[in-house]
Image (cartoon, rainbow, N blue to C red; front, side, top):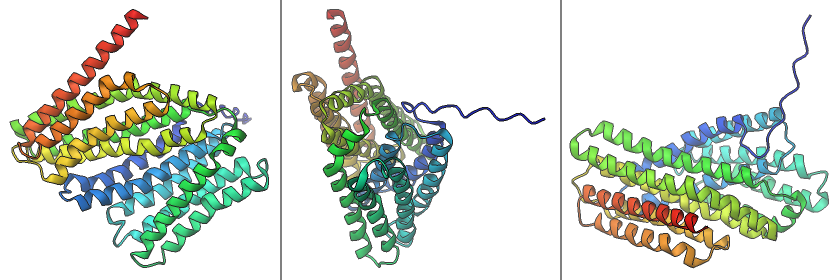
Length: 386
């Protein structure tokens, strides 16, 4: 006789579910599709296109992550169904990404429209009945109306299509900022552990793309000088990972708890949705620059690539400092690492404009090593005093 299947294991809402990690695979592919152009980009216009497209992709990820974060009672199987639908939409966006401003713009728009429909269903599931008329208006406007805009843009020619995309994203940002206070009051305790973990996952994805870019470039240009540049680039990536996972994620967790206790909803939106875009963009800009450097270690980097190289690391450290300030960390506690990091990254980027890539990468690797070492020494000294 068949036995009934055991009840589904309850979901731990403070941790990312396995199906969310499965969804991340297609997001990895999407980031790779977008960043692939950076490995050959040599103009500021190409960098601008990447930043604009990545902004739309980033915002979609933030939307979905925040929608899931408040669904603390969502069963694992229901969550899995939503993740698979979102995965299909994100997959369409990934396929379209290399030609998102050309022949595949319609597919990029359609994928975003479907993704908004998935998020609309998520928001409606948790807020439609309990939130009353104001919540229903917000739900319909937030992902319903903007989803219609994305869908309508499928049938609109360039460049009007891109204006519609900008309007749709701007509308979502404005609605989130305006309605964040009432939303936080309704959901009660913020799922801080979940948000910090999901942000950490995204940083891993960005750093993983950087490591992959280094390996692919070295595989295509295997010689001693390129190997040296690749080693320096890995030191830089490892230093950013050390800063992120041994300092940054804990800072985000503690900072979000502090803001949630104060009821500072706009601070939460700023430090989770807006500022991290600059941080992750910095890592991706670095990814393109080091790939270029490994391929041509004895050449001076083109101006746009040199800016991506130095500016990417500056964005990473500058954004970390800005997030710390928003969490209430005093500037005197941030300055010992933030000021040297910004100055040394700028100097390494400037060096890349006049010296071969090998020298610039060596300088950046040494700078990152010094910053990490000083931070660790300060931490140990503080622990002894405490």
